[in-house]
Image 1 (spheres, rainbow, N blue to C red):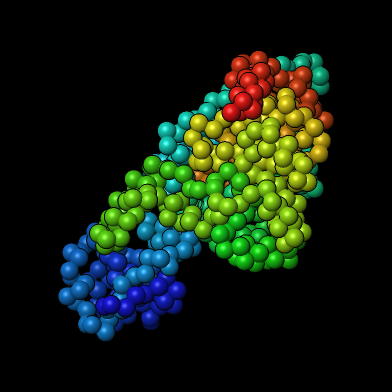
Image 2: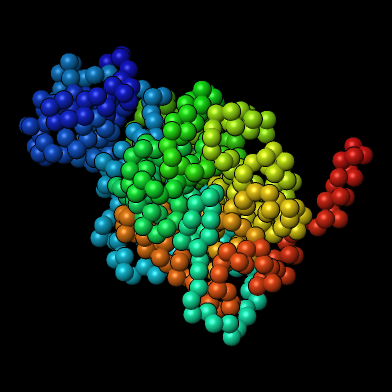
Length: 488
Ligand code: 173
């Protein structure tokens, strides 16, 4: 068994007639054995070309398989270094034991975005939930993102005939029913078998935009095929250490008319520590890989994100905008801006947009809540709102948050985890999540006396920012720091 078997090798043998399976770090040819399996051949065929370790270990001792098969059927050790996101997502799909359909609340019982996350925590696969709901370290930024929206109050007007209203706006040249996009999130198949197809179809049916992830569980064209050919998408780009791979992605995107903007992720130079994800992956890896592999992974952190995020190039910097520009026809949006200084930088570099984002609290913990960063940019660098599109994501859980962001000057708002969790209910779940946001936004507008969302963009007269303003960095303190730096 000295020979190594790669993901590419094992996936070539993924049928009942030619059935290789990974079990406890080794790959076996179970084609001949499957029809004689006491538990029935289906149980084995289900894992053809995949990792059957978990299910196998539930029923059998580790030695049994070694004893039962001939040497010719033992194909070799699994080569972990060949693992891909697609492969990992497929494993998730094939191992449903953690998801409990009996726990799934009916979609009709879901009335707000938090309900989707709670439903997923109950009924979704445990490790998918740890990956999706998790964030960095102490979850301080994750929680601040949500609670800081609540510190921004309205100043409503009344008696304004709010019978007919419009939430329509334009984002990156695309007409949308409301200025909302679905955040790019990795491997959506972990949330439900339809994965990104549900996000694409649900976004299209709701008149919003899905920003697909570099780390999606399926290819760009498959995601596009979930929506009508005229429906727009955005693409989130992680720049690969191997720049030629990124250049190939950009060349592919240039040929796809449906993609309308390139969101370059700038806030995750390295994958941060996601403890819920790491804890659960550590348990899993302990059962799947040899103790030698385990100790290597333990030192680095075994989370799904860290295991799969090694390709992200930490050398990415502002000079690279010129390189990206050379390889794309798309508008460039920098995702992960967290200060007025960087918003100005993006403007000076000629970018077409920014996303104020801290990666949903999944990058630097103790990074400021995104609504605070939006307020800071409005105070210290208001000219960016005229020169480029300003988008924001992070902790958005109410339709009223969309109205708040737009009144501060935002062109669009990203919503992440609630949509990812809604994939538990396939396209219908995604549509329901969008309909909840739409309804809450319309209600907030009517109760604020706003009839046309487009017309109140940047109109802070509908907002009371006093509570939030106490948390802004003081301009005097910034110059004090600058002075200190000058003396050093
Ligand atoms: O937040 C993430 O988990 C993320 O963006 C990611 C996706 C794939 C690999 C590494 C990180």
